[in-house]
Length: 303
Image 1 (tube, rainbow, N blue to C red):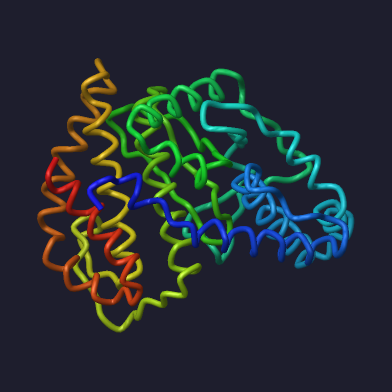
Image 2 (cartoon, one colour):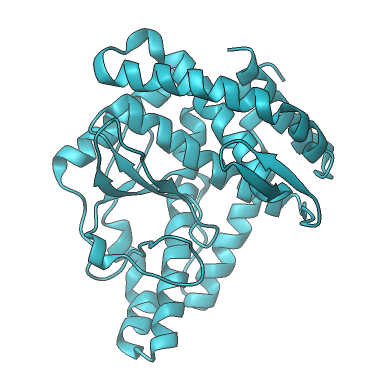
């Protein structure tokens, strides 16, 4: 699979998401919510899990009013936050730090869409759409359109600062990330977190369970990691290299500098990870998925 778009085209993911979305909606509102059509599936999948997470948190607090909102009212209310974009309908939010939640499901504070959620200010929505345009120019638009439909911008930082970005398994198709105000840089980080969401879905859909009794040295963390975390890095970082290499010729200024430095740094990291990647890949029991991860990693190594 020399074509990266082909490597990322895994029909099993869509089938899995359709099944899981229908199951979550039935749990929240039995008999009342038809499953979404394929065109609406990416955002519907994300919103279903935000509703489930919000309902669980409300139930744990004994907050029946909010629980009932997530079960009976949240569907159309949250869908109303969606805005059209170059990659299809998406939700862009920028909550304050004190609105973020802390819990056992994430190492960092995260946000759940709720009755008080409002869309991000127009400049941030435009910045995100401009990032989508950069992504579309690299051929990675289907990855991001399917796996980054709820985007939580967690703050602005200078280009020379470390940017935080993450995704959590309990909120698929949702991305949390800082930004620098430069669309090309934001595009890189959306690709990175969409890749994590893609791999989470692929592992679940294909029923691949990675053992945690063997570790691999991660040059990105500077420590030993189990196969799950290590392979996630060996998939997401190569995709950012592919994105950056493809978009660099059309960039200038700060964005060009940031992405040039990123590619240079990642080349060294990927070279360092090569031997352990080869070992860790043997833990992926699905032959097709193993081939996709191999192709993405090794394509990035050629850039």
